[in-house]
Length: 575
Image 1 (cartoon, rainbow, N blue to C red):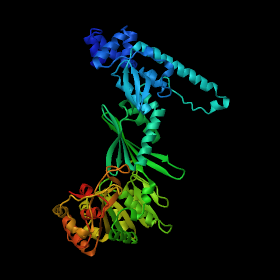
Image 2: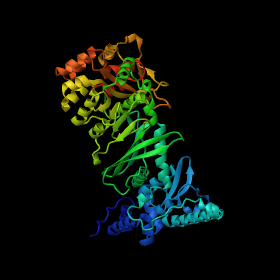
Image 3: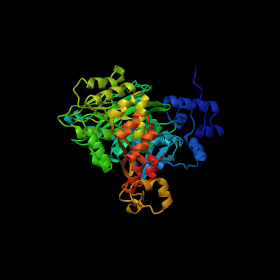
Image 4: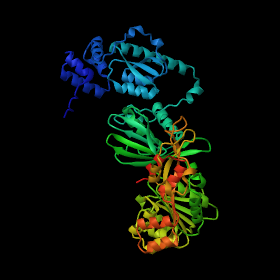
């Protein structure tokens, strides 16, 4: 069954309206061009016998673009080494000259946006189309390619036999079919682009990189300081090749495009420093979306003073870390810094006298001296199964990546009750909700009240740039009271609030992030309330009476300290 002929528009429609082509011939020509991967105008001149000058006049009238006479150009004056000869041959488009940061490309069809986009992507220079006649363009392209061949011959002639051994020669499949783009994953422009994106992300302090295909666009975004920002828009024609390159780098199955995949990339920055990327692919409607999480080992060794704990919160955390048994729980949404808090605690405890084991999904950062286990549900290695094994390995300290079910919770509590320190995470919004979450899972109230020693709920707020933050003199006193500044324990005259400014050293007035914490020690009073069946509201009220600041108060104290803005505090803590 023959495929339906494509609808016509643009230049093809103009040629039909000018009676230079009938509609069926135009549709058939478009279909043939797509199949043969030949530019439309060149196909018409070569196969349909249409006059190149006539087509150029029609295109000029349709798009309001003047025609440039290529007879006035000398092939020797064309810019050299700007564009790969393979692209010139593929798109039948040629760079004529460069002005400033714009490259002017000779095309016979101004609607051939794919050619312009691909040339822009490969050169990194903005492109403008210059309308020319197809037959003259073909002649000058042939001269250009021949000149390139001669210079290649001169270069090879200058090599001796030893030099030829150093050439990087790759095999090419002459019978490549639909997967040809995948086989071009190692093309120099694609490699350069991907490497540049990864390096730019590291330099900007991004935590994630998103490669996202859509129907008529392709975009790359960085998540920096918790906010996504678009950084590049490569042509959509490169989507498959970019995906292939990233999958090759992370050792995924390049032929599998129907299922999600996971992989890792290791990039050596210096001889002593490397950055890991955790890579995940997701099949979407228009291709594979790929997200890279940047795993910087140095973030796990920041030290507790760099995380943003208040002095009393830091003391509570350190006291419980050095208890021989009990359970410390860290809670918060994805991306709130829970892993860094846990790793910071483990680094404090990591001494030759202690046996530390962790069950993680996935293992994000390698910590020397700690036995880290990657979960693998396909073979039955779950958090609960790993915990059972840990208890037979003479542990002192156990870290469980996340308590997801009753079985894992019960084994963790059993470990904490039998002389082990257990660290783990849950996904809840506050410390009191963490306790009720365990109760709702089915953990007996007695076990929760006697085993859990500390709960840390946390968020990450963007830190104001110290170079450009500006005093906020426009906030009325009644607004400050409504926001809760009367409850933070600091006199109004003792602090100053700042707004974000903006300079070339930061992003919209912010640079880096600071932790906002709710640290609650399970005191005898709170334990009694748990045993009595108190809910999250009751526990939150009791924690306040015991002197533990909630997330809102902690965030406002960061505002009063000039570390972040009121707008940012509202973004991360206000309901």
